[in-house]
Amino acid sequence: MAAFGTAAGRPLQGRDGAAGFRFTVYAALAVVIMYLDQRQHYLERLRYVLQAAAYPVQLAVNSPPAAWSSIRRSFEGRDQLQAENASLKARQRDLELRSMRYEDLARENAELRGLRAALPPVADRWLPAEIVNVQLSSLRQRLLIDRGAVNGVFKGQAVLDDRGLIGQTTNVGPWSAEVILITDPEHGTPVRIERTGLRTIAVGAGDATSLALPYLPANADIKQGDLLVTSGLGGVFPHGYPVARVTEVHREAVQPLAQVRAAPLAHIGTDSEVVLVWFRPDHPAAPAPQAASVNGVKVGNAALQPQAAPPRPTAAPAPAMPKPAPEAARTPPRTGPAPRPKPATEPAPEAEATSPAEGPPPAVESPESKPRDPAEPQPETQPPKGNR
Amino acid sequence: MNAFGRGRMLLSVIFGLVLTVFPLPAWLDVLRPAFVVLVVLYWSVNAPRLGGIALGFFSGFALDVFQGPVLGQHALALSLVAYIAVREAQRIRTKPALQQALVVFGALAVYEFAVFAIDGWSGHPVTSPLRWVHTVTGALIWPPVAAILGYRSRARI
Image 1 (tube, helix red, strand yellow):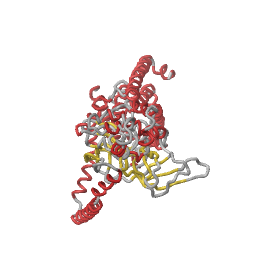
Image 2 (cartoon, one colour):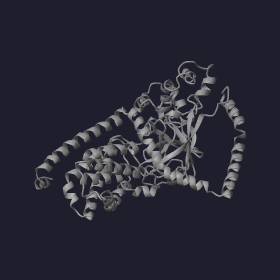
Image 3 (cartoon, rainbow over the protein chains, first blue to last red):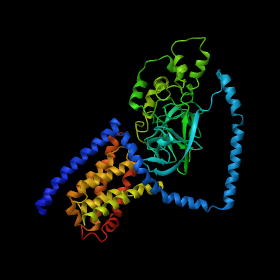
Image 4 (tube, chains in turn brown, cyan):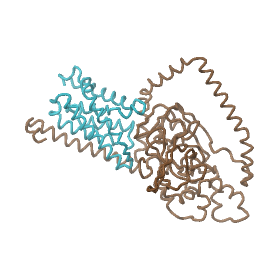
C-alpha cells in the first residue's frame, strides 16, 4: 500500500486516509448495530419496519416462479385434475373414518384420567399461509410466508403442514413472517421417540430431507422407523405432533453417542402452503407457555432456579402435560397446598399471555434444563453445535 | 455524469440483491455467487469515489435485511471488502480480467471469512464447507459481470 501511495502521488494518499477513516466509521456503526440487535434485542422495532419494507421486493422476486407454477397449474389436464380429485376424496373419507370415533375416544380418555370433561383439541385456531420465498441452503433453511402481525402471527409460533411440523416463526413483519425450518442447522426441536418415550433434541442438518439426533447415547433404544413427535418442552411446540421418522442409526463401539438421522414428515421442499397454529394456552398438551415475547434470558433463569422442587417431578416428564389437570380434578380431597393452586389458577383465562408463563413452565422446564435450554430459547440460540 | 453513475450503481446493487434473494433449488443455491459483493467490488474498483465504503455498507445492510441472522453482519463484511478494493483500486483496475478474477476470489474469501467469523461470534456457527463454494463461482463469473457492469461506461467514470 505504501508503494501504491507513493507511486500514485498525493491526492491518492489523501483519499487513502479518508477511506481508512470512513471504513472505521462504518465498521464501528456495523458493530454497534450488531451488538444492539444480537445482545440487547433493541432493534425489534426496526426489524419489524425493515421486514415490512423488504416484503414487496420479496413478493416481486418470487413472482416469476409463482407465475410459472400457476401457469402450469392452469394447463393441467382435465383427467389429471379428476384423478387428483378422486384421490383427495378417498383421503378425506379415510380421515373422516379415522376421526369418527375421536370424540368418543376423547370422552373415554377423559373418564379414564379422571377429568370432569373431555378436553377440546389443543389447537385452537388455524391459519393457512402461502409460501412467498424459500431459502433452502445448507446454511439457512427459511421460508417467508404471507401472514404477519396483522393476522395475529407472533414470534415463535408453530408452523405445520398436513403431515407434520415444519418450523416456527422468527421475524414477524406486518404482512409477512420468516419461518425457520426444523431442518435449519440452527434449529433444535425437542422431540420424543413415540415408541419408547425417550426425549431428545432433533437438530437440523442443513438439507430439507434430514434431521440429526446428536445427543442420544449409544445404548439408547432407538431404531429405524421410529416416529419422532414433539415433546411439548421448549415452549413453542405442543406435545405430540409428528416431526420425523428415523431413517438410520449408527452405533460404533468407540463412540459414546449414537449417530441418528431422521427424515422430516412434512414435505418441506415441495409445500406451497403451510398452516400457522394457535394453541390453547391452558391446555395440558400445550407447549409450556413461556410467552415468546418475553426474552429468552428471563425464562432461562427461571428454569434454572430450583425453587419449587416437589411439583416438578410429576409435571416434568413430557407426557406430564395431562397430569396437572387430573391432579387438579382429583386432588381436592387429598391435599391443598403447593402444587394444586398452580394448575387451578393457570387455566383461568386471565393473563394467559404472560403470567402462566411464570407459573407452570419452570416446573416443566427444570428437570430437563440441561439438554433443553439450548433448544428452548427461540431459534436464535441453538444446541451447542451447529450440525453434526 | 455523477448522477448517471449513481443511478447505474444503485440499479446494479438492486439487481444483485434480487439475484441473491431469488429462490433457487438447493443445489444451485450452493453455487450461487454473491452478486452483491461482486457489484460492490466492481464499483469500488472502478469508481472508488462514487461508491466505495458507503456503498458497501448500505448494500450490506440491505442484504442483512433479507437474509442476515444479525443486522450489520453483511454490512461490516462488505464495508471491509469495499475498503480493501478502494485502497487497491488502482492496481486491480489495470490488471487483465483473469488476474482480476483471482483478486476477486481473494476478496470473496475475505468477505466469506468475515461473515463466517461474525456468525461464530454471534452464536450461529455453521461450519458446512459448502459456504465457501460461492467464492469460486464468484471468481469465475467475474469477467462477464465486470463486462456487463462496464458496458459503455468505462470511459466516462
